[in-house]
Image 1 (spheres, each protein chain N blue to C red):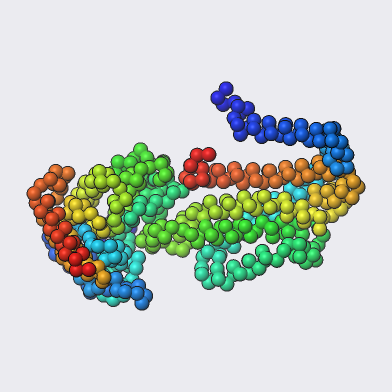
Image 2 (spheres, helix red, strand yellow):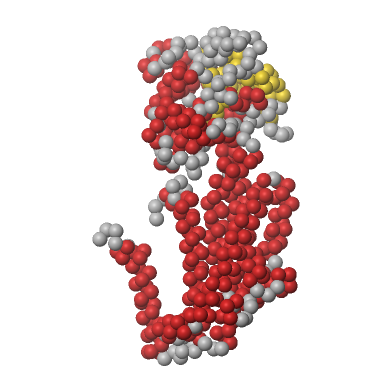
Length: 273
Length: 264
């Protein structure tokens, strides 16, 4: 069930280059409020192409995590539609990986079984899912740690396990909710670079929520700056630095300029509040 | 010497304290002159225990049987009840008050009714043991099943896990420490339930008399050293149960749970 490509009416073989205009995720006038509470998200229109890596950034309370959960169908939109892979978000679940704020591992399972859990839930037999889990762990450099328990790992290693788990089902769309927020800056930089490497190898499309301007520019092909109360899209800033990006990119002029541009956009959003 | 258990403080300290205690005991008897009908000397208790070994042994067997059956039924029943209560809001709100009601009614009041239904003997004793052990298991396990990390629930819902998968792979393992805590409380209560059941529903003759009934007999016959011997025998049952549960708890949790990893 994992190897079947999503069927596209427009085209039979999915093309993974970002510039082909075949949105993988299409949000149309999405609004969200919880009960009678204030409007969290208002009139969100966003289309995300295959191969894109989109950063959602904005002041706290702007609904960026909510937007991610709407995409994962963990929440229902109050109005508007979100299409993933041409179908409803519901159909797309099996093609989706989600990386949570903290590593969100099950403490009673060893690392290998944690990574294999999504496959278990999808009904893959034990031999196959363990083989796949080992493969994923080796990919994130934790093949040796397979038998350890989450408690025995550092924060950065736990996050790697979490990413391995999200990628174990070969998702087309990876959603990351502030994945590296709790880590120190050096670990965060390392993981950023690794994540880009994984993306080069696996060709998924990504959406991630972050508080870090540097991270948003380094990882993404476009940065979506949201304003708060209610959450709206303030600006979409394309980051036209070619992939693959390595650590050296961070010291380049174009990178610094983009960081400045995003910082200014964020600043104007904060002033408006 | 490193691995010699006698050099470990957890081994030699209890032995040392026990010896001091026995010393004070003898001191109290021979220096102050406490009579045997109030406090028999330790060697007299051993003698009496040996003399009454048949009654004590069959009592021990009977009571252990009631304990094992009552405890097992309450573990299985408690677990099933907890799963039922945690599987839907409707079940929790509808049924839990009645489980509470059962708990709130003192067993002493229920005992005559139980004897009325199940007759004098081992059946009633087992039911009484069950009633005493059931609630701590249900209450703790339900608490565990219902307090699963929200993020893990979301993870399961990302992968469209079924209710059954969520129960089996998420709620039950997450509730394991709570369940084992319930088990510990229940294990300590088990001999109390069985001995109490014995005193109200026990069968008085020979091989069928449980330890509680043996105590009643010794007490009425003023066999004071034998009474003390019976008390120590009952204590052994408690140790057996709590020991087994502690071992289970270690076996299930020592690899991952904080309680075993923070270093004692």
